[in-house]
Length: 296
Ligand code: GLV
Image (cartoon, rainbow, N blue to C red; front, side):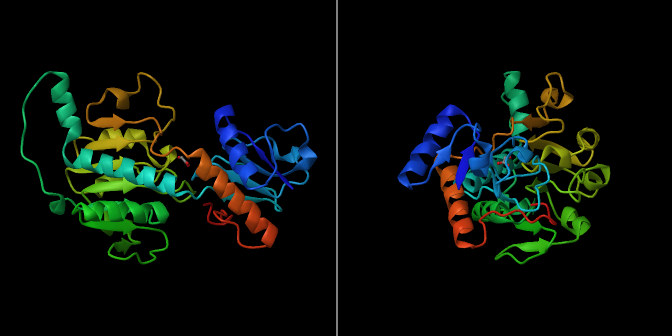
């Protein structure tokens, strides 16, 4: 039973150290496919080459880029406090940037223009978070502690302490001044941010997107800017990478970061993989196991 890691040399060195400390073997090349029982990777190899494979561990939080798994293979997404904290930090930064009109001030600054205007209190800006899993709840806590009224929207509507959780998207959008997308990409969320979505927001709303690029219709975003939407801050785009010359790079109302909200810490990634190995060995539930029917 040996895990194959497919990663960059500097990250592989960290995983090797963590695995050595735990007394676990690790393979860093795929020259002996029969020996491989688990694969940890972002981009998977041809899984058919590994006859004894029983788990694939995605080193990130989202697994929508993974191929369908053979029946006997469990897919696990990395659960790591660092990923959750990093997405929380990026999202809080983006919500504050949207709240305090940063795109406007960056544009004025680019012209050397010293001109301020009024500012709103956090308690008057209603934030709505789409996706109330581990990350969404952490973001909700962070934003609530800054004084923003926070609501959530999720497929399940499962209650979350201190947060009103909607399942009715229209009602949720109608009460939301800054809409935050943290959803996984599924058949239900693909393309969901379209013209009707933006039209359901109150005028002057703002978008913060750290879910997946394919959830956003970028043409609909462009049409909504200046109509219902004032600004947007995107860590994920459609397409991705966003090509040079794309309108969103040049539009001063949009801030783009290149999918950097979270970068998995190598030690935490290796520790998650060790937890998966232990669970498999003990016949326990696999941490981060992706539900095939739900898709995340
Ligand atoms: C990044 O987007 C990840 O899924 O970890």
